[in-house]
Amino acid sequence: MDAVTVRTDDVDRARAEVGRVFCPHRLTPEAGVRNVHLRMAARRAGAVGVIDLDYGQAVRIQPPALETFYLVQIPAAGSTLVRHAGQTVTSTPDVASVLSPYDSSDMRWSEGSPHRIFYADRRAVDRELARLLGRPVDEPIRLDAGMLMTTPTAQAWARGVTFLADELSRPADASLFDNPQVAARFAEGLIGQLLLAHRHSHSDLLTEPAHHPNPGRLVRRACALIADHHSEALTVGDIAEALRVSVRSLQDCFRRELRTTPTAYLRACRLDAAHRTLRSAEPGTSVTTVALQHGFLHLGRFATEYRSRFGEPPSATLRR
Image 1: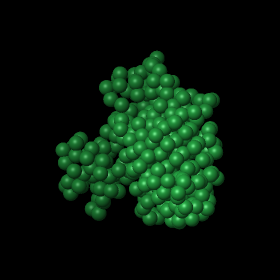
Image 2: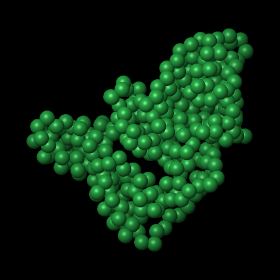
Image 3: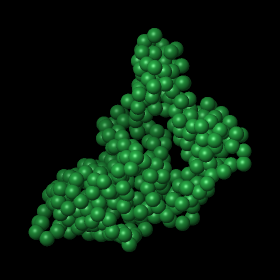
Image 4: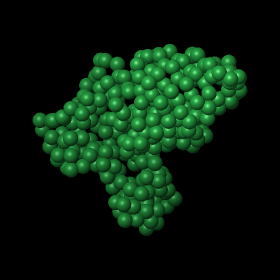
């Protein structure tokens, strides 16, 4: 994991430090503003990252085309006027601004508008869309410049970004993302959720009807794969890729054959396996160890789902 923390009131240093994290750009205090009060904490793990950025003053920011990454910028307060790719967005805590790699931007941040910024590598976004569709995509993926953050899907995605930020803020050897494979799988899921939650140039392809000639056989193969690999850092995208189908086709077949989703089936398999492990655990075993062993990264959610499925907390099973 990479981490950068900067605090400065000097405009030139602020421009240079932010440029090192993102890219070289123009930074101009608005009329009547002499200095900034930059506070930046940037954390990155592989293909994704979270940057908390606050200039403390009203500024104008003009980056060129980002080229290699996407940004989703969510103000915690205040507002930002963003012009990008022919679109104009007034960004607030309810509306994020989204920058794709292919066009320059012109942004005016108001005074008192700290932002949480999600960073995603362009190649990782391309790969994840290909997994969702079940085939490569040749044309650039352009995300709409404004993202409504009040929808259930956007809020679910934002909770994932918060979890990512919290884990990346932990000291060395204390984060779930110290393991590169775990970090990579979480990044894939977060990027996939963004592509499903927010409108982009390929959204219509994701909503096309998904029909498979033999849904029963596909589901049986998927269930067998999950049974063999559920304890690994397995995602629905991995399953679809292994079976050479799109995520949408896999989801459609699970709904038709089992009246559930691949994600829910995978989670149930993991819960059942964790339950068996807890029942037969040796003295000294911890619930946390068992949860992580069976692919649960969010321990609070694991405890809630475990109680819902088995009628007791995992600690109660462990004590028996």
